[in-house]
Amino acid sequence: MNWKRAFLFTAGLGAPAIALLSYGMTRNPRDIPSPLPGREAPVFTRPVFAPGADSVLRLPVGDSVRLAAHRGQIVVVNFWASWCLACRDEHLDLSQTATAFAPKGVRFYGLLYNDKENNGLRWISDMGGQAYPALSDPGARTAIDYGLYGVPETFVVDQRGRVAHKFIGPVGRVQLSKLLDSLLIANGDSTRVGPPDVSTDAAVTRAVTPPAAGVAKP
Amino acid sequence: MIMRAGRRSPRALPGALPGALSRTLRRTLRRGLLLSALVFSPRFQSAQSATSVAPPESTPESTPATTQSTAPSASQAVIAPPLPGVNLEFDERVKRIASRLRCPVCQGESIQDSPAELSAQMKTLVREQLANGKTETEVLDYFLGKYGQWILLEPRAEGINLLVYWLPVLFLVLGAGGIWMVVRKWTRPRPVPADSSLAPTTDENGLAGVASE
Image 1: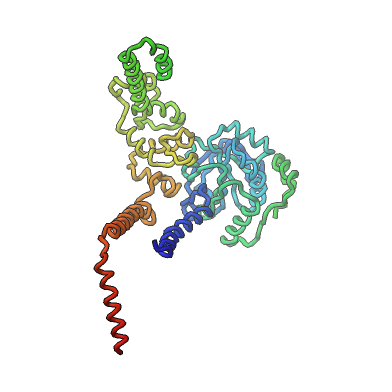
Image 2: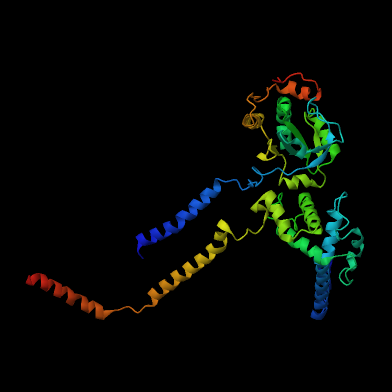
């Protein structure tokens, strides 16, 4: 056997295989590429079951929220559930960002995914309130419409009604604020809001007591 | 059922004849067959899915979905003819689509096989869309638009996906060609002494040529 030829043969077959496998190691198999960003956001009409603590965002229970009616506004749609642990991590960040961006016309909605409304209400009060209204999603229709495969997932719908970004897993206030700022600037609004203050404990209680006491509103 | 029969047979074995044993075996087998026929019969499955899946709010009236009323009769489903109002052909279509769609919260399972809540809800959606007159490709396209190619358990044979389908064939052809070449080389008769006797003469000629120059 010609050893040089054997070596070349093995290397020729092995190197691409190893290259392919090592490329695979750099990818997260749980990352499902969503076709939604850049496309028209699926519209929904969903009833409010928790009003929200922020005075600007607050909506009466039972009201229907129509996404289609929010053209010209940025809408942040967050899917959550009381049984979801990661939703606890992002809860405060979302509430603070919602309050900070409310005067700019940005609207936040939480859609309850495969959960009972009572559990959702209890969770909200356990967590010290939520700044924005929570909507129910019976049969997970809207969730499937958004190609949801877990909670939390957060979709940012821009002023033209398109999905600007999809966050998988808990959202941080800094990344969300940056995205919202850039969307506002792209639409001609030059004043930045920036990430809200990180006065954690004060912010939790602030979310329960509706009137603004804490986070600076520009 | 099978378990109990299995446990009984060793006790009966010492005195029992092979015939008796085979009778027990046959009975067990028949029961197993009956049971599996019952479990895998489309009626039983759809009855099950109707009880566990159907959301209380909005299965449209037009859906010929099997309702709870079929559940009690499921025990006799093996022999009973299909009840009026049970559209087996429709259920079959739902099942065909559902077994092509991946369950988003499972690992490599279709929404047909998965017991997850989301799968049940997706199946309800498939059922509704079909009932509203959508074709099978339209229903699949809906899910493709939401989840992308990932939602299909079997990738479509187009674009880069073609590699998945044709690379194995290519390797098979290459491998077969390689084996054929190697085998031909092995089995080729060695051109033995004649050549070895020739070589020196040519060499000699060459040398002679060099020497003569």
